[in-house]
Image (cartoon, rainbow, N blue to C red; front, side, top):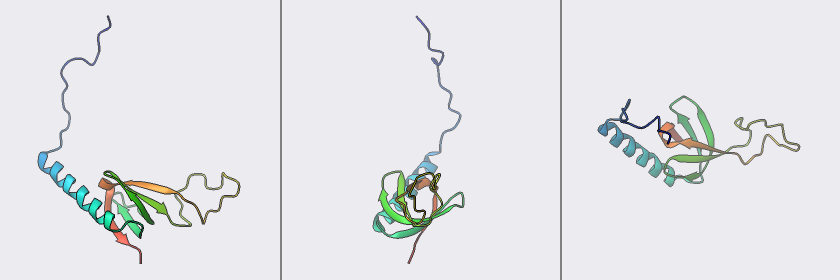
Length: 108
């Protein structure tokens, strides 16, 4: 019988503090509620990493928002790899993690 090399006690190398976990949970709930109010509207989001994305908010779940990219976006992979591809019209959906969002602005 082979022994499992991972048997034994685990040693945590990181554990999020309870207060920080509560704060992150509240932030996620707030972002989720704001996004739910603005479904199917054009928005601009900025991530914690400084990236900005414009699109139509088409879906939200517990962990992500989903943006339908606006015409002329540059997020598609190999945009000219397909015959008949029109770079000014596509139905690309970009998922973004709720925890990565820094700002959300309505495009008016």
